[in-house]
Amino acid sequence: MSLPLVGRRHAEVMASYPRLAQLGLMVSDSSRGSVHGIGRRPVIRYDLAQADIEKFRAGMGRLEELFKAAGAREVFLPLPAGVVPSGCAHATCA
Image 1 (cartoon, rainbow, N blue to C red):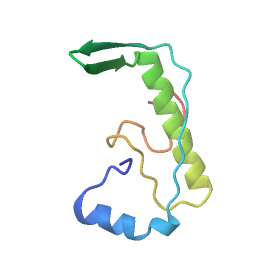
Image 2: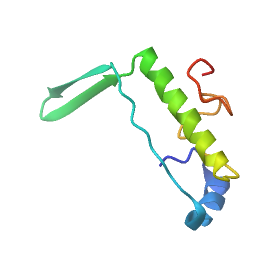
Image 3: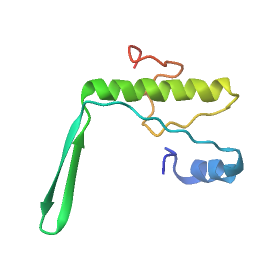
């Protein structure tokens, strides 16, 4: 689910599954959400504050740098292209 790929390219990358690695990150955030019900179904809403988005972008940039420093040939971030500028690990670059 975290691979931002589809079709043939997704199949090619998944064929190399034994050589894939995945990391995650946690961000101390100030955003708030809510949970309420519609009938018997819960409705969950969580909107990230801009400052928290910048922290997430910076964290993704640092993970990309970590993987490249460890020798990764490709890094797939679970974000649309351009959200984290390549090689930028600082919130001021995002």
